Image (cartoon, rainbow, N blue to C red):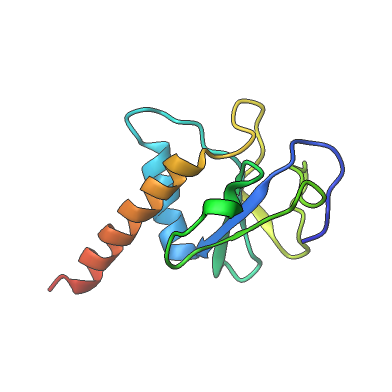
Length: 122
């Protein structure tokens, strides 16, 4: 990840695309209408990356995902995708600079359960 200029500092949670897409859907239709921050997809659409507040990596322990710490010197919420070959699934917006890690954790857990149930059905 190449550092970007300006914007709020953030960490990056990466997950497999299938679970990430389900989590985005859960977040966007959630009852509490919690804002969803920017979400990146890699060029091959194998993974999604959720921008979260700096320091999230210190306590991130969700199986099947990783959280990259930037130590305040790396990734900032940029206007353009910070990784060559990537793109925005959800671009940065003023009302949702990053996703709340607790809300993301709950959505990823729910997404994993839904996908497991779908995979074991029939």
